[in-house]
Image 1 (tube, rainbow, N blue to C red):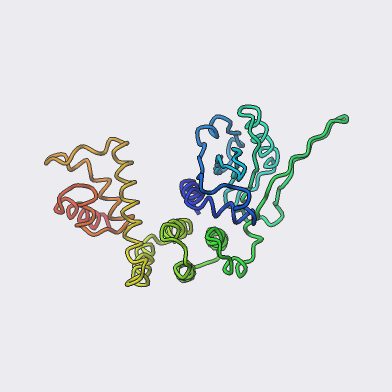
Image 2 (cartoon, rainbow, N blue to C red):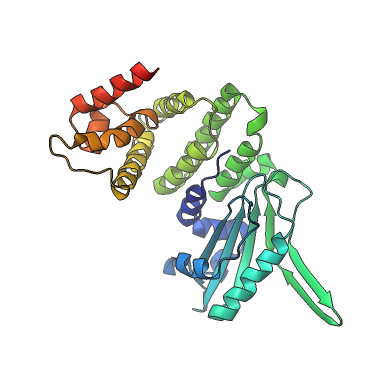
Length: 312
C-alpha cells in the first residue's frame, strides 16, 4: 500500500472527538468537546524528531484540547506506518515528550497507533538507566493487527471503522482484487447502516475508499459505481459524487500551484491538459463533469480522451 499521510491527517481531524472516546472511555468527563480542538502542525514541525535516513514516513499530530476544568492540555498522536518496525520507536516517543515540554512547558498524553504487521513489535515504554540515574517513560500504545474484528463491528464508535479499514489493508497482499472489492463493499455497507452524522460517514468512506487500493485502477470506478447503486434513494445518495468533486478541487488546486493554470481563455486551454487527464483517469468523470471542474470546453476534454485512446 502506498502511504498517504494526508488520509491519516484528514481522518484524525474529522473524527478527533470520537478518537478520544475510542481510547479513553471517560473522555467526555475529561475533555470539554464543545471547545473544539486546535491542530498544532507548526508547533509539531518545530520539535519534529528525525527518523533514520531511509526510514518510511509516519504521521504525527499535536492537538490542543481543553479539560472540563478549563485547563489547556496537548495530545500527541503518533501513527506508525504499515510494515514499518522501528527499533528506536520508544526513544523517539520520549524525545517528542521532552522536546515539547522543554519548548512549550506543556504536559502531553501520547497515543501510538501501530499499523505494521509484526505482532511482536508493540512498544509502550522507554527506559534508560546509568549509575543510579534512571528514566521511565510510558505511553498509550494500540496495536491494530491484534484487534478483534467482530468486537470492532459491535462498537458504536466511528473510529472503529478506521481500525477495520487498516485491518483490511494488512490483509491486502493475500487478497485478489475481486476479494478485496467484495470486502470493501461489505465494509461500506456496514458503515452506511450506522446512525453516524453524514459528515462522519463521508469522512470514513473517503478513508476506506482510498486507504486500501486495488491492483487494477479500473476497479476504482467499478467500486464507485457499486456504492452509487447501494446509496440510491438513501440519505447517502451522491456520496461518491461529492467525494469526486472534493478530489477534483484538490487536483485543480495542485495544478494552479504548479503553474498549470493558464486561464480559461481560448488558446490557453492547453495548460489544462494534465488536470483534465487526472480528472478522466483517476476520477472517471464524464466529459461534461471534467469540463465543468477544469473550466474548459467539452470539446477540449474529448480531445484529451481521444489522445488517451491512441496511447493505448
